[in-house]
Image (cartoon, rainbow, N blue to C red; front, side, top):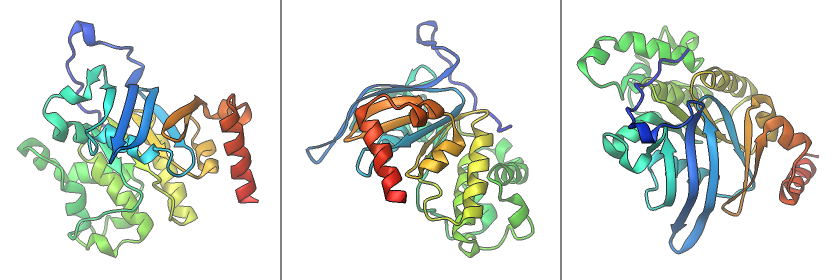
Length: 264
């Protein structure tokens, strides 16, 4: 079980259901006079996996960047644990430590495997436990057994799949309260994909995991919830099983039909 971040202290009037980890209300985003996100509304439970799916250009990756604070010019509301993310204690730097974002292409630092994972560990108490924290994070990312004998080796010496899992471990080392993944397995071999999916499922038992994916079979395997986006809007959201078996919206049915045709 992943160690939990210390919960934000809320006033009585700010408390939400303990089963809600994220609330998005009326989220809009304009970049260079182009509408990227339009009146996006949905909630994410305090645990479990949410799969963001939809055609390219739907706004899925932009939504993750809003949640992580990489985009800050959005309108609307984003509440984490009932707290407005714009007023997160410690500002955006603190919010980004709480909401870990793993990009599609792994970005490892030009240093050792160990130093990559320990990069974000701050405070003398945490530093004293750095070895333990690094080991736990690597185990959670399903990488420990492959690198435990060469922690001082350059991170660039790892395979692409291992580098992606190293990025996940680096995010986990600072004990986030939520993990965002932007197509984390899109260019990986089947074994690396399986290991990352297994890690995602374990993490989702204790924190929310939001994953952008174009791999619909992966969404089926991960289960949880599906949020289908198109042209910057949320078209439909449902349990994964319900969405794939009984989509309610015409756009959803056309997207699934088109995806099947593309695979054939």
